[in-house]
Image 1 (cartoon, helix red, strand yellow):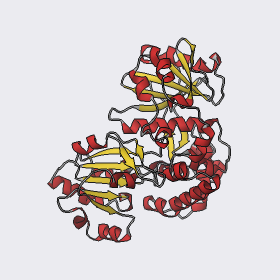
Image 2: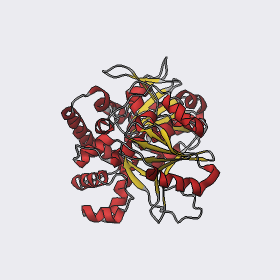
Image 3: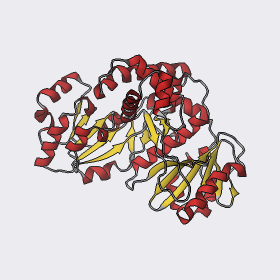
Image 4: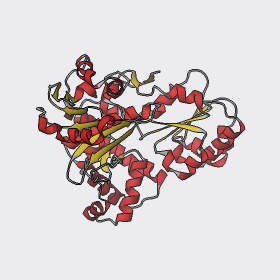
Amino acid sequence: MIIMHGMDAGALPRLASTLADRLRAMPALVVTGARQTGKSTLVQQLVPGTRRYRSLDDLDVLDAARRDPEALVGGTDPVTLDEIQREPELLRAVKRAIDRSRTPGRFLITGSANLLRMRQVSESLAGRASYLTLWPMTRREQRGEGRAGRWEELLASPDADWLDLLAAGPDEPEDWRALALRGGFPTPAVTMRRAAERAIWFDGYVRTYLERDLQDLASISALPDFRRLMRAACLRLGQLLNQTELGRDVGLPQPTVHRWLNLLETSYLLVRVPAYAVNRTKRLIKSPKLYWGDTGVALHLAGMSEPEGAHLENLVLHDLLAWRDARLDRAEIGYWRTASGEEVDFVIEAGKYLLPIEIKAGARPSLRDAAHLRSFRAEYGKNARAGLLLHTGSTLDWIAPDVLAAPWWRVL
């Protein structure tokens, strides 16, 4: 099923194919993601027929949630509760209502925070809810295709068929820098055409996050320091996360950096990619790598007008996360790096198979670019699929017997 996302620029399908299955299976479905990804529009258009809609962005509804939560969730009609992170205690009333009647799909809940990371929420809904993350729009969502990249097709096809599979697509070349600058939030990505307009939107987004959304999660008075940390994080995309070093650069103690990074991650602004953890014969680096939930916001915070190679990596990661979190069968996304310096940007772990992915901002892929992919495959043997080398040129070919070089736009 494809869910339509209404916008001034027209209706665009969103990547939400498992929503109906999840609503049929559990009493509650929780849709989370950063503010302005389109959650509210999505859930208001989700189910035909009668469904009460209550947004906690409405101060009267927020007051009712605090004074009489039972009345807000009572009754037999299905109800949608939007932006529930503004009053997490409301989840206790939802829990009691579900325990009285476990009707599938009774509650549809959204939050601009990862509610699973909020202890009182995860405890209240344990065994009662399914969770779905709505990320900013992928490139194919922005083009009206309502999907992420071609990861599912690649995993389902024999490696030898990958070249023909990607060559058969109707895809057209695109400037990845333009995609990185506009990001994936629906308004700047689809309805705005001028960089100046997007800059105003991004500035307002950051201000709203700092002055209101962040305060829903934790009381922080040192907002200039918090914003300085955000900027420093945006300047370190694709790098190993060293909290002590980051704190030293911005003049903050490590415990404060740790707590604030957790808040950014809970808000879906920051993304930490874990290391692929299976250690065979090589000594592996275990620190996470740091990325951002949206490249447009990251570039704005960093004060950069020209994307770099790390932003192309970030675009690929964003597409992978959107694909992963929309599928029912869980997949894991990590990176691989050894102490000797061998590194693969991303590894998809789906079932017993591993798909290694390397991203190069250059237009002429070479056999040298494939070296670490081949090292990874040698390390993990039959479990490793062929390596995928994404680049910015036009070459679609096997540059090694086990590494396919492909333009990034043929996959994303």
